[in-house]
Length: 107
Length: 115
Image (cartoon, rainbow over all chains, first blue to last red; front, side, top):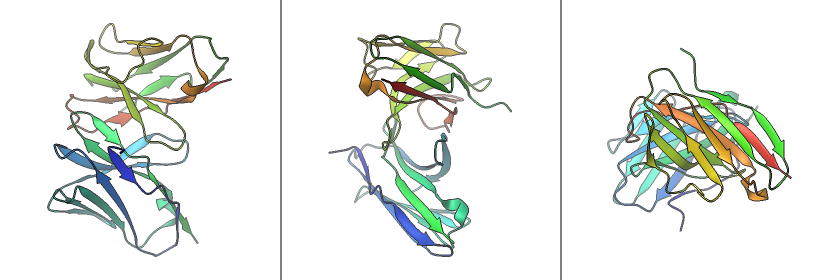
């Protein structure tokens, strides 16, 4: 079983849509959690940290459920510029990356 | 502020040849990481340095891969000899301190193709 599992997609959505990505992790001792964004043929960049209380950054909302070992990312009012791969990342003393979920926002 | 620098950006070699990659982290960042990202997968940590000491190299294939950070600043990653399965993007990242609690900043990567 992979340490961090994500649906690779692709998710194809129209502009303005709301889309949600999910991620599960296997190590119950995981310390912290993140979503990174990776554009095609570019390096990963931190999108946001994920907290148990949930956190929001503009159109992006991240949630963590430690009991279910489940992380989510919600994007509201999708823009063309949101097209990218979203990497779920878990800190177990080092960062473990999921394989990523690809989002394609269409006009 | 300058970001993480890596060179070369692209490299094509034949199997059994040797290759080296260079990374210069963000100024003042004590922790440096090398990751391997195979197409369709997320980055996988190969080695982590804290200043010039190795913190974690548990996933580094030590029979063929080596890395050093002699002066605690820039770093090189070497593969000798290369195999077809080493074809990947090699990403260098740095952070102010270790423990993965601080944001890691990635360089643009070196795309290696082994033929």
